[in-house]
Image (tube, rainbow, N blue to C red; front, side):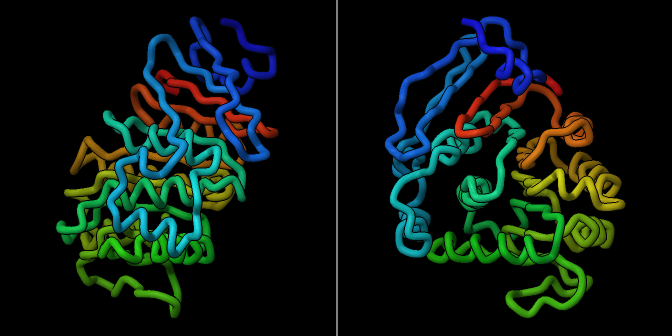
Length: 274
């Protein structure tokens, strides 16, 4: 099948040969204009209920009771199977604030974590202390019944949660913080990486606008790469400019998934290395 000129621009990083487009309207909400593009015979599925994602009863309870969710939003229905289904490919996602992206990667982190293993297993990098605290609150509510622990790695005082103590080994299973502080914890060897399964970059475009972010983040990737080769990377950005593309190319290796939400439509592709 062929795609329009505007779509070709959106998926410029994807091989657009043999693309197939599914125009079927499978969403009942008001924002139901959706186009899914897959490359070749790559399998793809959407989840129209949270039960389809094989989530734990404790996590489902957090979604329904604490988050007051009824069903996945459009971006959640599309991205969560990409995040949660083997072989756990990296994901580059262009999604604006208010699209439901925070719940996507938060649910992804909570789903991949083993509650019985008392060690860091998921890491989320945010551009500001405020966003790190906000994301921590979402995780606290969503994961309330799971027993999964989290800590917030940010500079300065942190009074609304448990701050990582200086030089104390971290046993929390999810760590959310700013790149500079997270990098320092790694350098101090107080943030173990042996069991890390997921690394999230939230609002990557905003982080790249901050001095030192790219160096801190690439330094983090080097630390992680020395310890494990099985860490899934999720990169979320409201815009996908050249600086974000170059950064993504350095942290995402091999085959990966790409998802773009623009002007009421969602385009998904299975990408080769960026």
